[in-house]
Length: 385
Image (cartoon, rainbow, N blue to C red; front, side):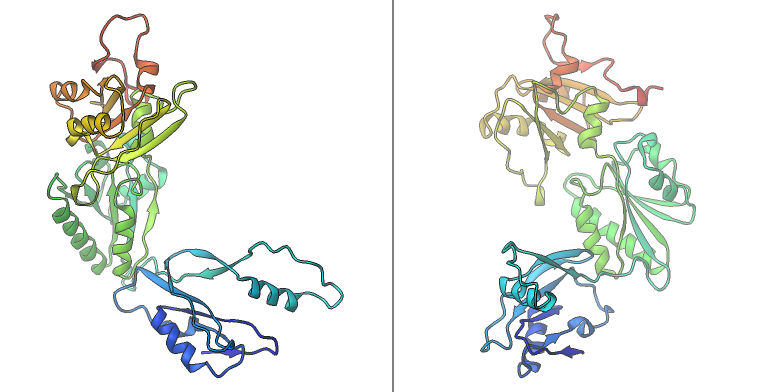
């Protein structure tokens, strides 16, 4: 561990794996006046189960009468984090960098330094690695080039969710395993996925974790990255086209429309442990897009009316299997949509859009027909060509 000292009084910074480790370093250097501790060399080899975050203990003023350092702050691994400098540090830095004749008044605003957070390697010694891939709404033509490339590599092990479309699964040239994430058994299926990934990594394989839509939009992508870090590997992430925006577009529903909607909210139908997330309150110029919510559509419609203040005649559209050849769009209102969806046997994966934008392109202003039912012709050209 290296230390340095200076005649000027400056605070000692400590970067360590935990507040406890910071305390050990502080105690061992408490006799040094103004020493700057380089704690990077103190970080032990990352051979055990990888930590999901490091802890930063900053501004331990060891040379200032034994002042106690502040509580450690948890910082996510794998990125560079801006860290504010205190006014004392700012003043001290100014005195070090300015020439004697250049003592201009400094702006008192906060300045920022950088802390580099360590993260696991992207591949294990045996070559095992993980790529987290978003498959988009379902149409193979809407895959990114990077996603198509890894799916077509016959040496890769692909682990897919149940809702990934068969059209995309048909592109896979290597081994493919599909997890049966049915409602009520998601936890068991997720454990199975983790076991498969660990088996692939131990065998030195390139594991492709394939998820519907975008993995970081209500797709547990962040949770899986943290889990894979515990295996000692940092995931490569290939974004996907999220159904939150692509599904309404493919169903002829603009999520924003001048004079109708100027804000969009994304929600999930299922929170942690299958709970019902809190609902945002009604605003006439607001669009709300629900993912993974068709299984509790009737409950959701009732809660929007009774708890969030939505009028019963608020327009609702559901786009089922967006981007696939059998895509369907059904429309109704909060009063009728549950019955319409039941009549037409609407199933996941489906995207629900709530708001008057649903009428923008699908309602005929001159028609006397009720705005409810299966919409014919509401399929974008990308899935009909």
